[in-house]
Amino acid sequence: MGLEYRQFDFREKKKLKIKMDGYVMEVIDEADAKLKTKQRGQANTHASMALFKINSTSPELNKNEADHYRTMTAKLLFLAPRASPDLLTDPSA
Image (cartoon, rainbow, N blue to C red):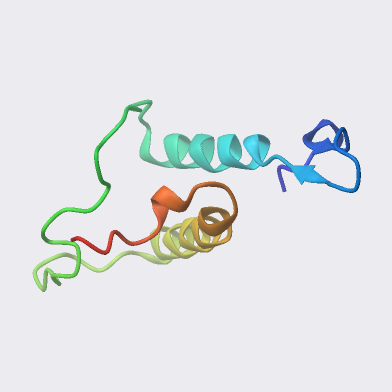
């Protein structure tokens, strides 16, 4: 799950820091493999003006695509509040 031994930091007295770099890279690599891309960069926001608009003409996902979508959504929901709050819904969208 991305939590490796070296990601536990006990250097500060009475504090434990847990880094999730390994988990972040697992999620990114899994998405890259599925999407067959290595496009990475920065953006001011991940949200577009159409964030909550439903495209009724979009084709349904097959079972494998739907399973992958749910898996990636769950991983990002786990990751976002812990390590990358920028992934959470943009309230200004």
